[in-house]
Image (cartoon, rainbow, N blue to C red; front, side):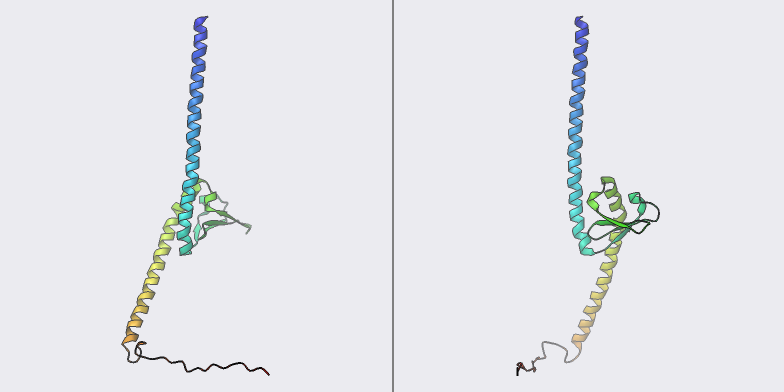
Length: 164
């Protein structure tokens, strides 16, 4: 009988040990879920500064969000995802409200497009600034165009309102 009781005690000890392992794993999963939320929040807040400044919207492929055929998805500068369904009804959801996998897919898909748009905007602005600098330099070389040499006077007169 003693060996039967010892076997029962060993079985209970193994069950308790298994429960402790389960608790440890559950705590680690909980901590990872909490960390995931913090990481997504950090990415969301940091990226939102950049995208809001740039002001670009990106069309997302509907398959990224498992949308039905004929749907459209747009990532806005405020990091909202606007979904336009085939019946033309729309819904808006913040990027940080999607699952970790969906956020990763959206970022993987949209980041190259955002980079391309930012690069094109930078090149456009560089060209315009270079043009304006060149025009300013040429205008300064013309006689009588240097503002420092000209004295501007205000010849306007102040007229008071007369009421009758």
